[in-house]
Image (cartoon, rainbow, N blue to C red; front, top):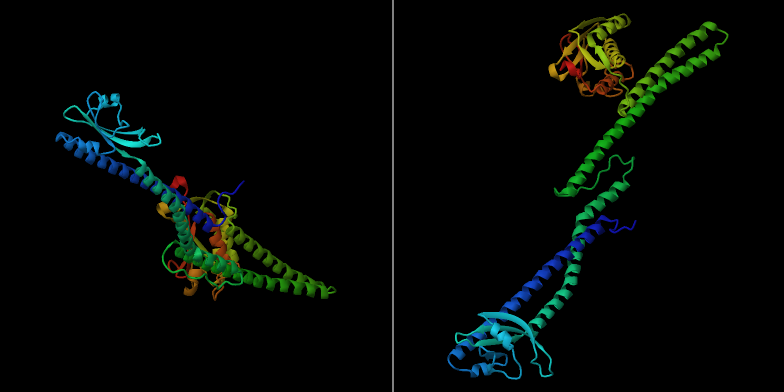
Length: 448
């Protein structure tokens, strides 16, 4: 395919500007030419009318010499005979004389040239009160010459004006796009290692200045996201390094004590616990990665939150050695029961890790806003400085309030709730005075 417009935005704008300017100038100059032509015709007709009025007054006074002295005027009888005026040519034929009624303007070619040629004349014919007809003419040569000169001037001026306007447009577009070019060059030099660099500021409040500020804000957000991802990789590496080192040490101990079955068994048991820890950590990281990619699978089905909470309380109570209470009316939601069990398990084990002795699970119904559950404990609560970031990955307080031990428990809770189109928040206070995590889920369509 043939490219009509150039690739550069600068060149395309100048080309489009020049084309539109050319069309506008041609239209305006064309109108100007027509106006000038009309004004010349009006001036010629006005001159003819003035001469005709003067000669009519002279004829009325009986002065036919005035008509005879005008080389382009003739007086005719009603029958078409020439009564006065230049001889050797007729401005009007007898038939044209008889056809005059009132005042008529016409353009005719009349043979009045010395070489036998015909001159292009503008004629004003008028019938006098006596019945005679007076014809006054003027050559069109002056008008045609003035029109030709005007057309020549316009033909020469149009390309010059187009060139001047195009150059001015090129300079204006170049000045307008100079900040964009500077931003482009600067952005091209920024790499992943230059996370602190910013784009050059563009003064003003126009579109380009707003674009520069928007790109700078985007770089700030990308820098924050990059820092978070780098911190995540660092924290994940740190969490993986410890169990891997312990696992290798236990394997080395087992290999060095092959003749002592008890020592080998003890080392293998310790190695298995570290393998389980690694498996759990890998699963947690995979879940968070899927949630970040929007690929966390949620198999929805009707779930009674109270029944699910009571079942989990019976399982988790003996394991955590805490007293678990479930309160509230039965509430049904469309959710993944396995994922909700994971949420409850993380929250309860999180409370156990903080030293709580009692956990209360309240089933909530928030009218048309949705339903949910609240998990509260009598522990020390969340540190105030961690409340804004308690659901971030690898965030741990002094009491290690992170169900998985690696700072991923509450992150997984938020990921699962978000996959259910719900929300979760953390606070401290009633009903037990410790930590309080509230999960809100959308209500079923039939329950709204």
